[in-house]
Image (tube, rainbow, N blue to C red; front, side, top):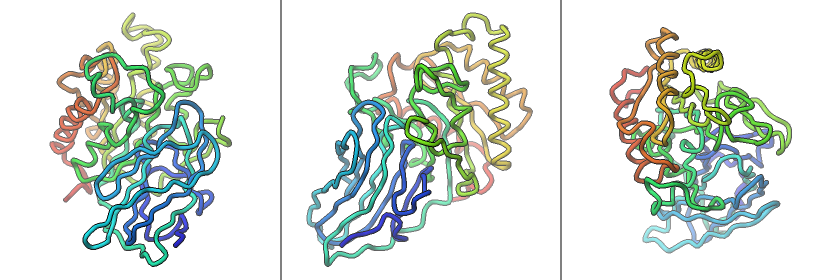
Length: 349
């Protein structure tokens, strides 16, 4: 039995391009679709656009997780083996493991001809939105043998947004998540690592659905569709490239300009979300503490009691490489406890 991608019993989560309702496009990590069904057949029809690395689709079927290699370009039908269960009811979550190293269109599904698509429970009322870089995206998180070490050579196979601190935190708190995270991104255009040599910063990404012009027309996001009670801003990690000016001279004109733009970014978020708690942080990935000092100064100068800074026990000194699963869990545990300590409008259980 064929199931259209816009079937009302499917449950989507994430900042998705719905311009073609029967071909929703997944761009950001942690973007997902969930379904509950009967029968022993499960297929997903997809179309992939590749920018770099190998690309994988995340799948959790009846609690068992797997990664499925996607085609570099073009359409494919991916068949997922379904084990028999006592009541013949299955639940699956398909999700985007990686950032905009690829774009993925969902073209539909297939289950057994005598199968049935079942209703899912309602989504959580708690909502979190994260603005971050590769750590927020769960990049190279599965390379657990390299915990506390530099990154191994890889081609995308170790990246898994399920194990990002962002998604782990959301699951700990029973919250829905939109993860606006992109590997290599800094706050400002022309800095960081993303989209070299024409570097794109979070200032140009935060309000977009598609933000990589190489994939097609850049498109705007409609903020009315998702109103988070908690917004996490985890930017400041890649801003030291190509020059670590904050470390070199905290009081320089360039450093002051960055703080000014950071405050401007917070003001834009506050404009979209008047009631949200905005939490500013970096991560355990090694970086100079001057960036955290700057964030702290910017937060104080905002004079907004619902904009705060969270510093972790091993902030900026936990690992020279990306966070692996144990380190992401460590960070998520601290972040969830921090969020739990706050009074948050609309956050009741």
